[in-house]
Length: 66
Image (cartoon, rainbow, N blue to C red; front, side, top):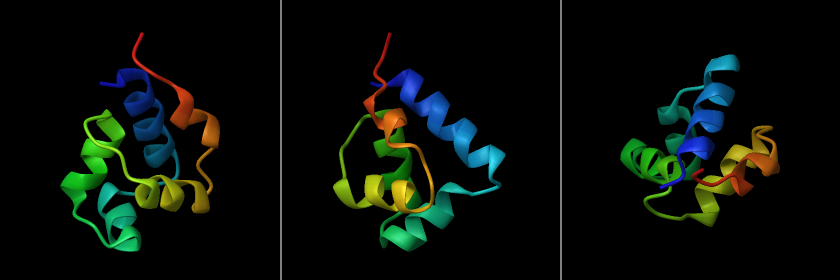
């Protein structure tokens, strides 16, 4: 599980007032899927790309659990 990545992604969402459901809608997936990708429980190139398209720094996706 990627705890640091989750924290960075959550911080990025909060700072921009974006909700996980907004990402889910744009990606055409469930909010649970977005959460699971953020936590590192599953992978999805589509969800990752939606984050990046919305301005999320790609470096955040390289963070892993410490």
